[in-house]
Length: 196
Image (cartoon, rainbow, N blue to C red):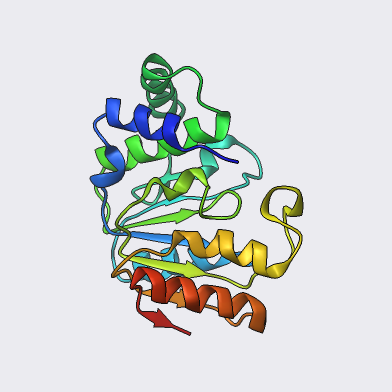
């Protein structure tokens, strides 16, 4: 099982940056997460807004994962964030430290919107420290990371649906029926308005 306690404690020591961001749209799913974030970024920027985004993987350099006010984070800013994080909690995994760095950078710069892509799954994913997203998106779910998320679409959908939060609109792409059943049940359980 995954444990977000270490990351949450580190974020608390850093002043809980995850609670001080421009409105967050949290994106989970198997296929299309990066494209969905790219579309949302393009729409916001075309309307004249700056956007923060955390995505993965990167193609050429790690900085590509950290879009701060519509620009890749520079090396110095990333190193400063990494040093702050290592000072409060050196035991974080590399991915947890990247999430923490993104949240620190996003807190310190202006943007109209924050777009965050899950790493793997959703419920136990490091990005799920976002407790009050403005909205959640679940792109099409397929069989992925079965060693960690489970053998069936139902198992995997349960992980992805773990990002849904009370009151945050849940925008759901077309799904296989067994995945949609899990998402609908989770949305009802947490009180998330569902948009298919």
